[in-house]
Image (cartoon, rainbow, N blue to C red; front, side):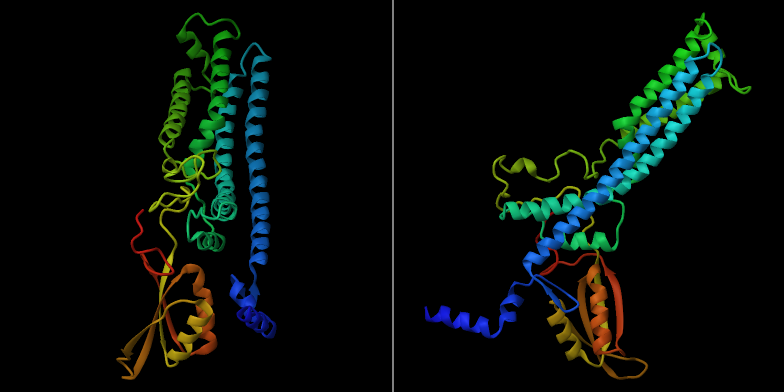
Length: 359
């Protein structure tokens, strides 16, 4: 009881001390408490979800363009007994253009969707089932994605996926309508050669148009097949965790020695930086980095070959999102310091990837 009273009295004398122990983040001197951090994450989640929904509606818009264009072209082509089969060929080109536009939009949709899935698997799932910890560096990955956004999937995967899901069936309808138009109008063709001859357009023989259409469809089909193994799209309804088979169906806790990570997480890992600081105030700068960034600092001895002066070199390993903070600290404590920032291939150890981690 006496110890509890002493702790309570100490907290009353210095209430910020207890708050500082619970603070999980700082921003320009303001300490964010766990509740505030959770609230900020919820608002970020809602914002990313809104943007993902907006781009999802844009995907539906391009698909609707293709469907409406196909329906209108077929109606025009079959409303006349002669000609107008060229309208269907024009539709084939327009549908391809819509497919390209939709693939580009799909990449933007995946950018927002990947952030949503990262928060769902690594933040909200961890809150619901505390032992479930898919990845220890999810916040850093999310921050890096916010600061340096990039498309999580390639244009090839987006193009092939949208082709297989939606546009393949539109192409089938267009081609079947084109062949039916050539075969049945104005009268039923007597032979295959007669139907091919009817396909002529603007002085081009019908054989050339058949070769062009065949080449286009074959190319699209090959792209659709070759891009099937690409599974980086986080917005698809697919298993989103690696090693999921090794986890019991009713127990989300990973087996001993086994980690679970989002399969759509970037395989290359976070971008690491190695910083060298040449300064005349090594103790002050090192103390600032240790206190404000909680990063380890290594002191090296150096000598300027031109001036012959002995100088201290500080070496710090950081993530790409921490470089700006480091520069601000050095600028404040020693504006005359010389700072070298270079990329690091890999950094293992405390604060980074465990050295014994296996991919």
